[in-house]
Image 1 (cartoon, rainbow, N blue to C red):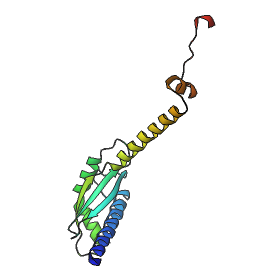
Image 2: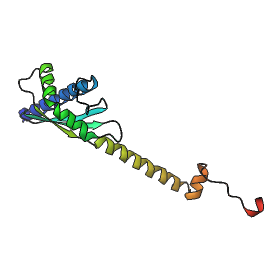
Image 3: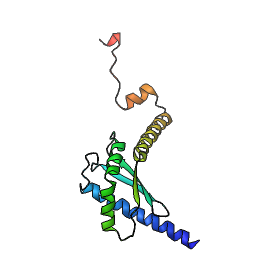
Image 4: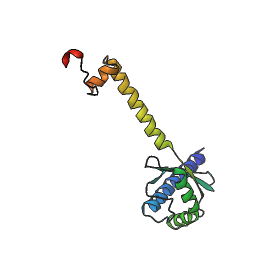
Length: 150
């Protein structure tokens, strides 16, 4: 059992090192593919137990950006990235890199927005504000003139 724990620790540690190195290559602009921008972020790396491959998950911090294009750009530069990893890391065999788009960051932001919307709606309901009353409290009503006020 201790061997399995050590193997998992080793693959996890290797994944973190790969994530850091690829991130630095992106930020330094060393990957020349135009699809790879400094806004790409490596969210996680899962290394197989036998160290033969590593699944690298890519996200983009800009909203509305095409994550698939960035992942494809990194995949086309995988040979260069693997050679850079080999030069920086002291292991016999560098895992084969497989890049995948990861939309979890964007989905997380969307979830937070929905939760904030629900909370503000619930707070408005708790204070007895409805429709026009909530708008009046936030200064969103128009002055309506009555026939006697003209």
